Image (tube, rainbow, N blue to C red; front, side, top):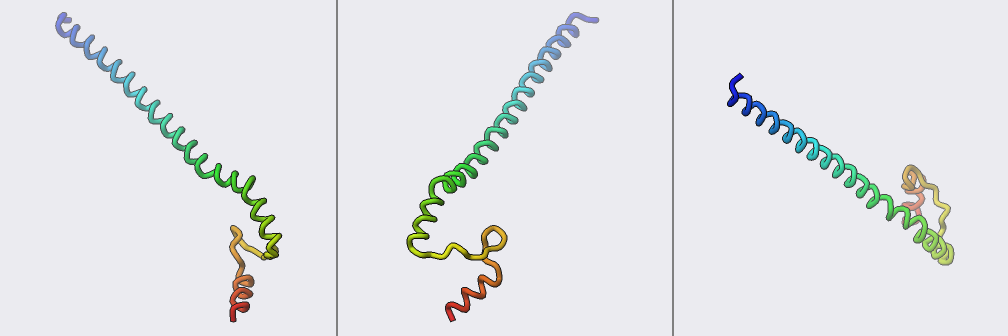
Length: 94
């Protein structure tokens, strides 16, 4: 094999190895970025819900009990009122 061709092949091989190393680093960086952003958004969503349940909900329950508000309402899916509850509300305002 000609020495010039052999040098070019070795140079190309070195470039390919370097390229492969850079691509793996980029892929690893993208994966870590995805994981950290996912953990961040889960925390952004769950932490306020947890803090509300631990600290604010007991205060709201105590205040509503002192003011005489009724907390025994029937509720359906996700705490939304059922059709019977909506009818009772409409009948109160007629």
